[in-house]
Amino acid sequence: MVIRLALALTFFNFVGANAARILFTLFALELGAPAYAVGLIGGLLYLFPLLLSWPIGMLVDRRGSRGLLTFAAVCGAASLALPYFVPTLMALYVAAAMNGLALACYHVTLQNLIGTLSQPEDRARHFSNFSLAGSLTNFVGPLLAGFAIDYAGHAVACLVTASQPVIALVLLLVWGRLFPRGREGPAPGGPGALSALRDPRIVRMLATSGIVQLGQDLFQFYLPIYAYAAGLSASVIGASWRRWRWPRSWCGCFSRAWSSGLRWNNSLPGLSSPARSATRWCRSPAMPSCSARSPSTSASAWASACRSP
Image (cartoon, rainbow, N blue to C red; front, side):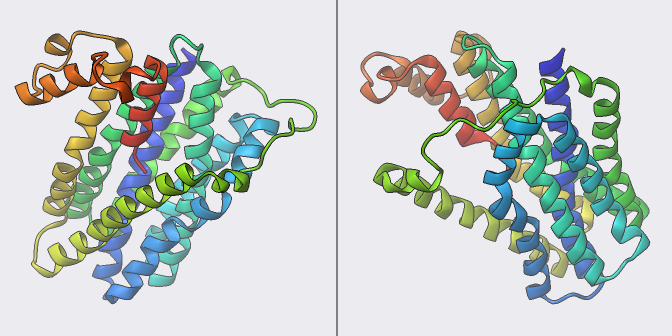
């Protein structure tokens, strides 16, 4: 029950966040904003996740997850409702920053919650389900925003997407007491996050991840601007975003099946024969890089690689 509640919160919160990205962009373009203003909105969406992810993680350990998730749901709903009442470019800047703050809170908190609620034998499966839920929101959110804009206008679309974190808030108010409380007393000592940068392997991993994320963010920045200039409707832009996100859903299914230990031919019938052969080869003892890992480690790595943003 508690795991399902965490996955439901993941779905509704991330639907709102993914809808906000395309909604704020198209709203700004409709208001006549130049490209640099749209880029500033995109940057503000990730300002607080960049600055506060580590402190939020420490706060979750000490205070528990319910309070932060409640704050994130309220902040996310307020950020999406603000442009409806104040349809200006400055309001979109504030809304983007608030939405980024909500994203920082529930993204870190939900991951920590999934790990806390899981036992060692089912942790990989739960993180894979978390990855799959996040992948689904990557195309549900843009679709919701696109069709809401076409059928109701940009301002009303903000209220429609604000309903998603409101649903998450209702779930928290009803069943949030089921979540574990924070840890009493001072946090245990240990190496800080900055000390991990001394490991060259972690530095290479972060650099590679940053380059990949940079390419994705540039694509997400240019796609709505180019499509809007070409005269495409918001629903078509949202559908295009959805089709680009579709492989991530397959990646979530891939990690889900990996952690469950299912037969590939039965669990992924839509996967092509070369892909099935590659996965069987990767799971075989002949591949040292995979066989040297435990199933839990491999599944967690896949889940982390496939998770949404």
